[in-house]
Image (cartoon, rainbow, N blue to C red; front, side, top):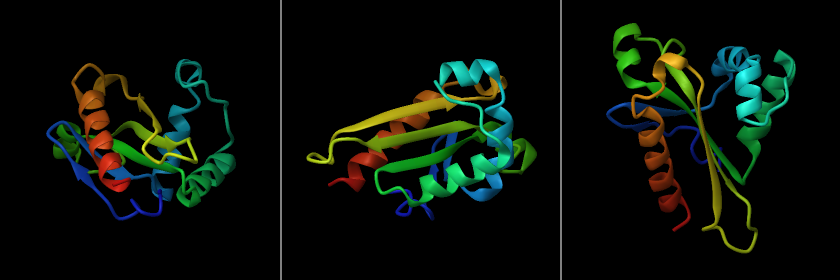
Length: 135
């Protein structure tokens, strides 16, 4: 699925979803050094090289779809995708017999992007996108 969305951009009022690409990895890696985010996401600390490998594996995974969540307000101010990165949103197809069953996850890693409705909008856009993909 990640390959399906590699050229897809979903635009909302508060959130913009872009495919997780190699240029996002350094900032994503910084986020994932936070003990709080590691605990909240049940993740393990990875080296930068392992993070690049993980991004590549997600890109090739037919059962996973990942987008980086951009803070639309911040993007308008900084005009930089990396500077506007707020978190990520994923869904996983985890029932081989029913592609309509999925698990969805969201992380708003940037504290100044929290409690602004960005996560809610990103989840809604992701669910709508996923429902179109599996039809």
